[in-house]
Amino acid sequence: MDAAAQYSLEDDGAGGERLVLSGSYLISTIGFVDHELFALEGPLSSIDVSGIDEIDTTGAYIAVRLASENDAQLLCANPSVQRVLDAIDRTGHQADLSPQRIPVWKRVPVEMGQKVYRARSGIYGVVGFFGQILLGFASLIRSPSRFPMKPLVRQMELVGVAALPIIGLMSFLIGVVIAQQGAVQLEQFGAEALTVNLVGRITLRELGVLMTAIMVAGRSGSAFAAQIGTMKLTEEIDAMRTIGISPIEVLVIPRILACTFMMVLLGFYASMVAIVGGAVVGQLALGIPFFTFLERIQEVVPTYDLWVGLIKAPVFGLIVALAGCYHGMQVKGNSEEVGKRTTLAVVSAIFAVIVLDAFFAVFFTEVGWG
Image (cartoon, one colour):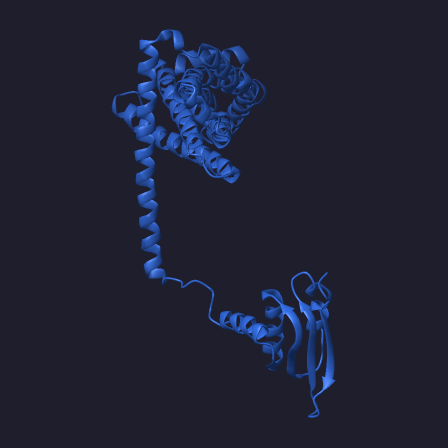
């Protein structure tokens, strides 16, 4: 068993104290005295380590640190101990360990350039991923028996049917808010009856589909990224490739088809529920009978407003599913990457949906569907 590390204080005859270390100063023995050594008070003129039998880097570090803090001289008569002390002493320095900070006028352009470069790489990745999906579709068309019908039905249930309650509640409340706030503003001009026009057109044309896409991105897009990312992390996707199963065909394509198709139904459903919410406000606050409100919707809302919403819905669904699956397939390294990619999937999907919605608004106005 290693001898215990020991120390003692002696008078050096000049008003100071000399610290004498003895025994074995190893990592297995130093724990008994290290706190006491650093708690010593009073100036130390020297530290005598001649009585140390064995020493390792831990013991040498403590001796060198004590000498440095007390500006004391190290006294050693043992050549092997001196070599360890010299090695530890050479590693000590007072250099600034913080990284050099680039000036702001250089740092900002560099950061912007890196972000642009990463954005370019991301666009290349999405285009390549979309190409893999097209190849997967072509493969399934050549071999229809391999089409993953059960996963498709399952994803349609998760994306569509399971989302009906939350999307219905959200849409109903949006219709209520639009009708109530619109009526307050139109009342100033004596045009409360135009609340029907406002609710009908804005829900069928814009908010019904847009808010549904945002809800699906937060609900299903994040689920796609987390599910596929976890499978990537646990090497399930690699195992699928090993046994000859294409992850694109089995995991990605069912989710994209389900989200694209169900967005049409969910968008129409959300618009209808929002109109019902507006009709409830019309009945309770404006004195417009419920069924009269609904009949008036058919008269004042052009048919092309409905088509505008139905055309945008599958595009938004495709964007949401593509973002979720793409970021899920990019997961690698550790579990933290799953959360990061899930967040990126939701943010990028919502951003792309809003940008496309602005494009559609200009496009449909130019073609006469304004």
